[in-house]
Length: 364
Image (cartoon, rainbow, N blue to C red; front, side, top):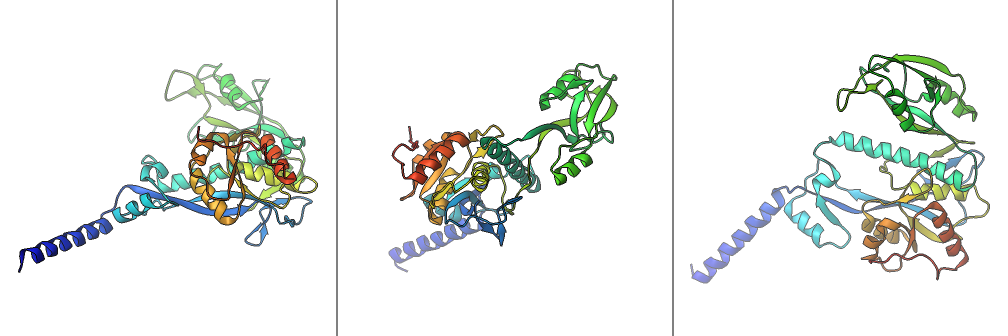
């Protein structure tokens, strides 16, 4: 066999071997790509995304307030080298270390559970932020968020109980509970005044404030870790009572990043007219109960997904602006927001066609 032919054959065989290796050998990476968007003013699976008592129909003006998502490879899926290289070269995909999406210290089920909890919490804070923006009454309660197994509080306090006071001192913030308990020494008794979770659930159905306080006395114990201090083994949290029922019907979505768009959708549904003026507006961002908009992950994927869905404006958290501005999809305008009030002001400008003064995202 001529030397040149033998060399070419050897090179071809090596190339084939490399390609096979690239396909067969898994690499520790995962892929993120633009996911679907959902109009918070419209329907999903045949029912309104936002269901508010007294408001039976969904948006009919043609406007959109779309929340955006990122599609990721599954926790069990392992990319091969060829897929990773393709993802690195593709414009619409991002390849990241597998541990970025699925930390080594958490199981896939724990990651899914965390995402589900964050999504549920984002819905609650969205409701609070929206109602407060509309000057509607919202009552906050400090509650028992969780009870540690085997702790003194087990069987005495329950998740969802509203904590009114500890040793007669009114509780206004979750941190107040730990401060009041740790005034005791381990082994001493502490008295909680609570409204049982079952009473809270009944009040939510009737639209009334929860009532029926009970006194619960618990003997403290010493914390297992850290400095010697008294504990009862609960984690305090916050729950809210709303003046009417608000349900968000959207399945198979996780994480906290839809908070802003849910809040704006609720404001739209509870306000005369509409916020969009018939425009297609998308966005993202966490939101807290004070209406502050926070950053999210995957901003580049979300702007691409929004533009592909038809959005012309994208409400962008201030802290994500620099990253988003590096590669803006053609035809999409980024609008910087940091609070729900800023977002509402921006929507008013878009609705009126006064877009020259919209806050811009820059790479600087």
